[in-house]
Image (cartoon, rainbow, N blue to C red):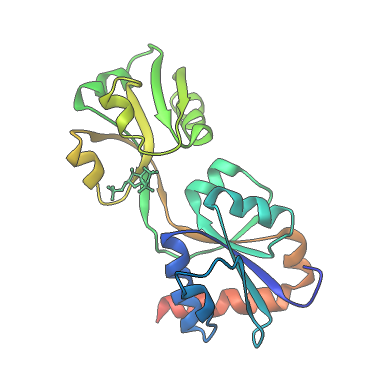
Length: 215
Ligand code: PRP
C-alpha cells in the first residue's frame, strides 16, 4: 500500500489458479507464478502496477484487514470464520460448495434433540454460530485441521461441520449430509482504507473481473 502498486493476496490452492485465469481474461498475467519450481513469494506485474502473493488461505483476510494487501480473493467460508474488518465486493461464483453438518445417517436424530453433541470442524466459529444462534443447541466443538471426515468414523465426534463440494469424500466414507448451513463461493475482498484511497483503480479491476465472469 506504500507505493503505487496494488497488492493482491491469493490463498494457496485451487482458488488461486482459477483467480489467475480470470485475471488473464482481463489481460493481467503473471507467468512467473505458474512456475511450480519457484520459491518466490511475491510476483510483480510492472505494466499493471500489481503485486500478487500467495498466502495460507485463512491468512488472506488478515493481510487485507491490516492493509498489507489491498485486495484478496478467498472463499466465503474463510471470510465467515475469520470475521475480519474487510469489504466484500464481488462474488466470483466459482469454488461453489456448501457448508454442511454431516455424519452417519443415524446421527440425524441427535440434531433434533437437546442433548449436547460433539461437532468436529475446521470452522469452529461457523459451527458455533450455527448451533448456538440458529438452532439453539448446545454443542461441544472440537477443532481439527483437516480430514474432518475421520472424526465421526473414529467416534471422536457425533457429526462434523465441513465443506461439501462433490460429496465424494462423504460417500466414500459412509457419511451423509444431515443439514445445510450455507452456500459458499469465492469472493473478492478489499481493505477499507484502500477502497477509499484507491477507489478508481480498485473498482476498475473489480468491474473488469465481473465482466470477464459474464463472458
Ligand atoms: C475439503 C472438505 C472435504 C472435501 C469435500 O477438504 O473439507 O473433506 O474437500 O470435497 P468433496 O465433497 O468434493 O469430496 P480438502 O480437500 O480441502 O482437505 P482437508 O480435508 O485437509 O481440509
